[in-house]
Length: 268
Ligand SMILES: [Ca+2]
Ligand SMILES: [Ca+2]
Image (cartoon, rainbow, N blue to C red; front, side, top):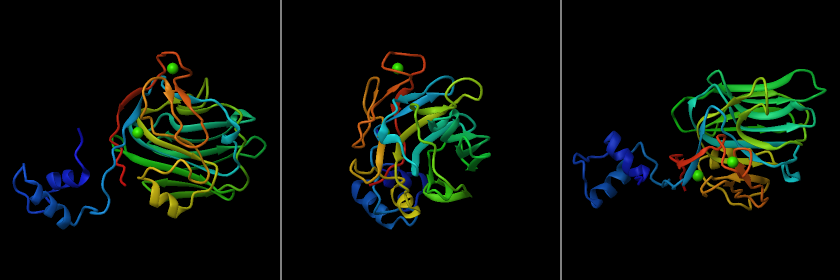
């Protein structure tokens, strides 16, 4: 059972004049209206379930589909990491295999957006610190000119990276950085509300929607994982039908993340 954030803030910070640990409804209502450090027009939304990745071998796999082929786009999601130096929110690989990719990963205590393109010298990377043990929204946008990283809806870093993304040909994977072998690391923590877009989401759109659910019909939304179901299927809540599986497929595996109650701070 979770309390709405407005009530929680009153208990924790004592913003209002509440001195009783069990205030009645009228007192709570007054305190919520008066509370200066709360946002009175943003009610919390139940985020349902999240996936908990063990940092050892857990991942989720979404089979490659043409709807996930795009040259510009956006990747975003909520994480509560127990290790900010391992794994990835999402990884997509191009025709050059492991060497040809875009991922939003975690490395050296930072969220790090990375593009590597075969035939293009070097790589493009942009990073910013991300805390452990705290629900944090991370997003990266590639617009053909810059690779941009957002933390909690705010642009934190940008790097020039002209061109297009490598067209993905392999599965979309959540939780793991590098598909096999050397360099493969796994996310440790909880993940919720992962969204993949085939369009450039603007800074204003990121800021306005990072803590909100979005409609399946939103333009350019090609994969959307709320993780609220049960069983092995990772349901796509976009219109694209990019359902995936816990682990590498529908069988019960050690690589299956666990479904846990999400505490991602969504609002309406
Ligand atoms: Ca959820
Ligand atoms: Ca499985």
